[in-house]
Length: 110
Image (cartoon, rainbow, N blue to C red; front, top):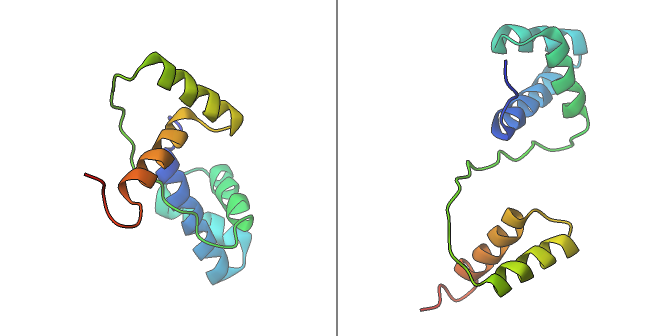
């Protein structure tokens, strides 16, 4: 079986948090996850341990798609450099820049 997507993982961690809040008993919560999700007991305990590290629900990430754009070489180099400086993935940096442009106060430019 393959690895869970980030969205599935976040949903399962949130489920584990709710079960821990409800029952307080780790083994009872693990068995509930095994029955509800059809996962192994070992995997259920992993989700429960991770859930214990979070004080709040884990945000569910949006589904992402790839798209291709053509940009000048100098701009691409600058983006890579800035992403490296900030220790970010290129897609994170571009997402932040586009969100800042599209959703800035005063509406879209145009």
